[in-house]
Length: 349
Ligand code: DOR
Ligand code: ZN
Image (cartoon, protein in one colour):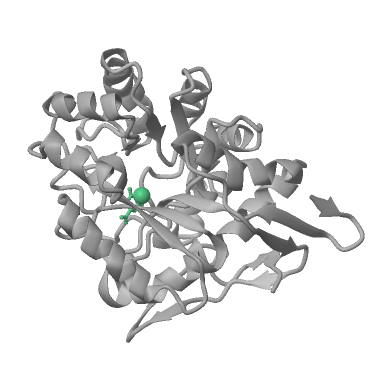
């Protein structure tokens, strides 16, 4: 609800339905930014080595919890990294134990630390059958990987070549088409049954592909799936702000150190956790639908995952906030999304 006099916006506490925390010093540095804004987050398993066992996921969850600042109330929701070899029993076991909330499909070679991902979805059929049976959701990085497919077309091609056949085989499987970037994906999800939803990042709402080349090569605008043409950005914005329960917040915040980004082979990933909610609020305000931000950030995700809504609220106020040029991590630093720019919303204390 917003009161015009104070320009404050109070929402039920939100969640981040797609996030990378990493490990070690990076983990310690980045967890507080997410815990400051979100009650829960779905944590991606693409560590090196990837999180493919219940034991590894449980230990990783403990390391995350140890990095949550004193007094913060934050719950990490863990995911299982699917490989060609993973056993359906292990996946189900972790879900029944309450360790894994969802399984993650990375096509092999699609993105950061996806080398152990799935080479052919056919290899996963026993696992997908099990997920469908036990009601465990599948998070999907939706891009084909072959070098003869243009990188800007990889998401759209994934829909036809992988997703539609997969949905035909497993019609009741809950699928989250993650970090959608195209009109094709937005339209596809909107037209799919209720067991198919999508997450949307701040960068895919705010940037088009010109951002990659604005005055020179811009590694900090590089993520996967790569940002697309303006018409796709507009379609993704329309989906996010439509009020449809099929679309919800997933930042895909993916920290890499400055030197790993500013390199002859820069890593994919945008670290947007420090001002994620502020960025989404900016978009919803620009679209004139601030009243729909709560659904996107706090209601649609739990409804899809069959989880309770969070208790408590968070308040944003209409006031400028300066995004720092960089954020320290041990001896290193990370350049956040919108570094050095100003956003129009800030979290109230
Ligand atoms: O840009 C990305 N970065 N996309 C992904 O899918 C993975 C992520 C990462 O882990 O860095
Ligand atoms: Zn991701």
